[in-house]
Image (cartoon, rainbow, N blue to C red; front, side):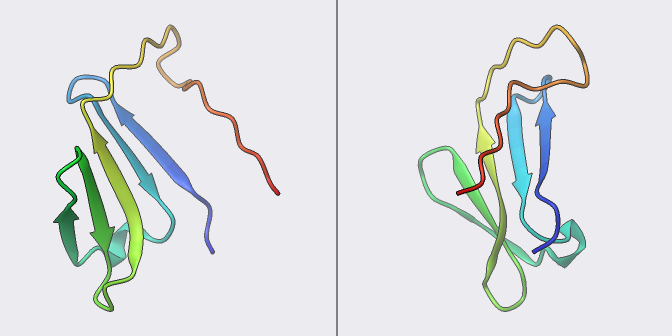
Length: 70
């Protein structure tokens, strides 16, 4: 697995998380719960986008994020 990439668009209020190379995006599937699954040509989920996420961030480059390895 590549690095996990997290992008937050304050204006669009979307949070996008990639588990693989964004260039492999082939199709998207809406779940109906304000979540869009991003898939590659093999229908493997390589990321997701969460709609209507309002995060208050003081620092433009910082997100309130915690990474835990189990």
